[in-house]
Length: 188
Image (cartoon, rainbow, N blue to C red; front, side, top):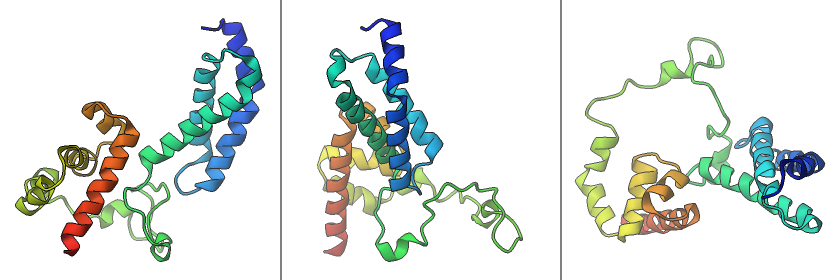
């Protein structure tokens, strides 16, 4: 492990790189990533990665890969599960919005428009739906477990990966396969 003075020097030297990559990601994904969040993720990864640098000559390329990877993981863990067609994207609630925000035209907030929770419907009853369970039983164990954790329980890819003992990317792949299999079951 590098002494703190070397790490601090590297962090200060490449802080502009982390900020530039954060700006690049926030411009590329404006509805998914705010600049302040991107900078926080990028700077945190910069500090972590500077502690692992062994050869200062390869530092810029290594740090760029690490920061880009951290930003991509952050977006992937928070992006929508289903990709909408371009025609529906303008109507989708992609942006961060407060439920207390006043609706356009006045007369209440977004929270006021939501229906009251019904005791008969909820995640626990959706998971107990015999039709859904029958469809999940036709999937592999990994795919079914992935869907149960990420879709029915609402866990992030990383949280599901920790519970399953897999990588987040493996969970994402299993999730995609499972969703495609369910689409084929429904359309058949």
